[in-house]
Image (cartoon, rainbow, N blue to C red):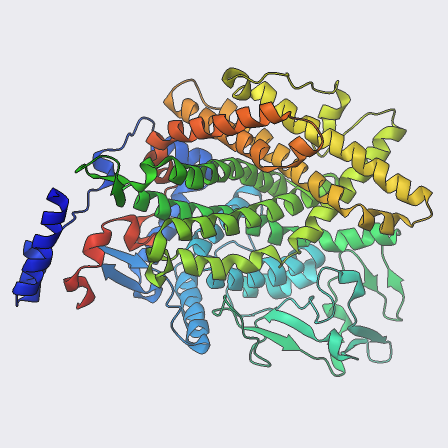
Length: 632
């Protein structure tokens, strides 16, 4: 009755008052309470951030500050804070113009210095870190830079020789030369070997002649080519994608990037790599950088979505659980915890996997190229799928506020959806992972069951046994978690190899046998990815001394591992878990969510994302939506 009387009084006052500003100031029903006033900070967020970022923390903060300081990055005040984000309401032409203005701004301030001309691990890590910061502001800007530096510039670096480096690298780094990378065609994307553009060598002039002989051979989605033919998209409108047709385009022989293969003046094809498959792999190896940067970007965008949704859930209330009592914080509802906190745990786990991927990439050798290809394919797929799921859940968890463009989450979905298909369709990449695992399985059988590489060494040990009864202490033990993940991976690999061989025994080709076994291939790819992510998370946790930070990581690691067990039907389908044990896992996930809940603010604060890169609902959303803010 008291609440009914209060609501009636508010309505009566509203109808009787004539001064709207007075109504708002005297009858404010809710007040914003910063979560920092009540939430627990029991570990050093700077130390946690170092673990998450892995490298170049100061360089990241330097670029964050450069971006926040400039009006080119569209600062807008909401309440007492200023937020930056691209203006997605601009026309496509305006967005592309702003992309180039921002590139000029960053170029003038030395952001790209050494991106193509500096050598060594530190230079590569710096470049990766700065690109990650750019992607957190605007995917279009990051993709525009990725095409220019990693695809065009990377092609010169890896495929070119000294004459090409001297001619183009520094000018590319300084944007004197602007480049495209034209591989994808209308008729062929993932199947690069099937592209139909034809190049003929003219020995009389020493030139290559390039032609588009059919419409399906037109180059498609080419960044930097929109002045020729525009492609309209659901996102990434700051990138000038276009289409290309070639009509007797002549290129001097000297321009051929010839580190892997060459053509002599008289037209002889030359390469030190005689095996066509190995030579093709050598051509594809440098393109791995795209999958590395996409996998990392997906994790950082997941962090933005989670930081916004969790901060909102720590200040937004709904319904009371007792008569006349205060309304309950969204994140104090167990159902809301289960929506967001397992995704938070997965994002932490994937941060470790991303850092592992980047380290093997920057320390690559010819011998490690296969491992990098498999790992980057697996993580690119796993991380981008996770990002899309995370952004959708965060959007829904923010209710109607999640739809507002100023709150970012909805737009991030459309901007980053493309990551699931470019630089390799995720399903195709996972099949490549399974193929590589099958090849290692066959090779190991020829070595008397000795597995080497791709993290499959666990298959040299006895098969793990899952206890019949899973108490909480067992479920949270690192030994059980790794045993469960390894059991799934080794069993699925054996089943996959058996099914492929059975199809072949019935007369099917190896390739078609693989296609027919796609369900096991998909399960195996997921099992490999999950095990790799868990393993890298273990390794990160092992570097931390006992204390509150290590305790928090342990909770997240267990939540990640058990959520994977709960979600993947393979654990029940193939009998790795009984129905009773599956129920025990589900119960433990709920308990872990409640234990992670007190650390939620600290965990998202550890991301190190500046306030301006988040959105109004992550802070004082009442002030940001006030009458005065709306009429500034």
